[in-house]
Length: 399
Image (cartoon, rainbow, N blue to C red; front, side):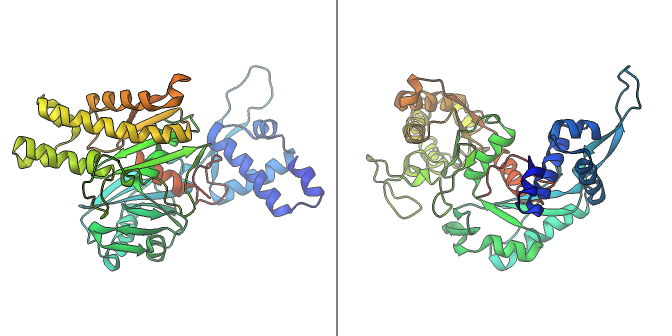
């Protein structure tokens, strides 16, 4: 079909790229396979396939991977071609209160290296430090291919279209051009996400949302965010800043939020508030750093009642998203703070289902999000910036 289209005047460069992507995707997602199999599965002419294979071999996107086992029907066995995961590497960097964490992944998105460092959050120091940490990790990882892209996880309100942090008060950031700063320091394309959006992307590419096109992650940590994948694409909105569930108003609360407004969901259900209330109830400063699972493990009736109330409020808020976007999977957490809090998840799920119209017509899977889901998502988003022959065939995040 592509070759016919070419003869009818469609841009031949675009056709060659499409054909090359088809062959690369077959090797990446279904390989290893022989040249004859590539011809059969792609539907392209043999000379076209041979030319593409030669090109993929020359740029290192593919390599020879052994001999096809004999079929018993005679004929010479064909050599197997496979996608070369060392043709590219990508980095995912988390910026956290205590410093940065860098994960290096190969061309399949499989982690091959990890490092962390304490850094200043002053932009003039932060972005050179991130670039240096990525470059050091890359240079010290023998199996790493050329570094070709990076995904940056930063807190706060993030405009994904510009790669800027619109606001994050704890670091004093306002309209920080994070993508531009890191691209200048690192020299490769960069994509920027907040953790909630990245967690949703990570779950549909590698986690419990895999195989689903409509997934919501309620990201619960010090604050509350939401990541939404609908119709197989990460939802971005007009300014790329979808997911600020924690700053939606709850009618019965007038508590002062960190954003400066009153009555936000974060004033009744965020990790910051839960830990502060636990410290007050127990009279212990140590409680202000406890995870939900540790708080549950205390079996303190007053703590349990407080956690149940928070889970209830979070479930009500999540039901708004369920009623709007009709997901098949809702995932809670994605953080060390929320992991394994089984009673909290049970109470959250009960309230969510009670207030979701769709729950009467189809069952919604409600589970924990993985604690690495945001890193998976940043890696997946970075891989979508790879050259056409190296990137995954299914895209979730590129506008």
